[in-house]
Length: 85
Image 1: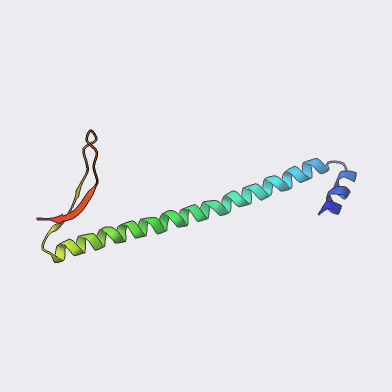
Image 2 (image 1 turned 45 degrees about the vertical axis):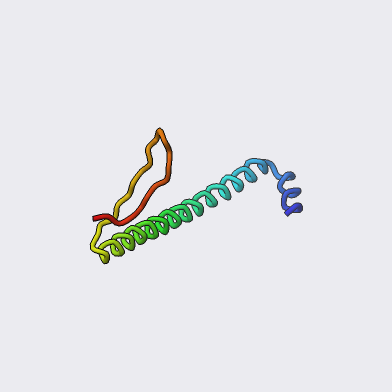
């Protein structure tokens, strides 16, 4: 690699070539990262929907419906997910 850089400096326009190669490498890395992000989001959505369906089926087997309670913003507390009639 060092030999290639030394040869490149002997040729005019080398800095532009190096900058172009670096830009190409960055853009290809960004494109690859976009696919990873899309795959991670898709997997997260499948897991979230699967958990919601499992919760629904569990409550239905008990003859109830899923319920979710949010705590008060003023007093704080915990979220509650349960089955109710």
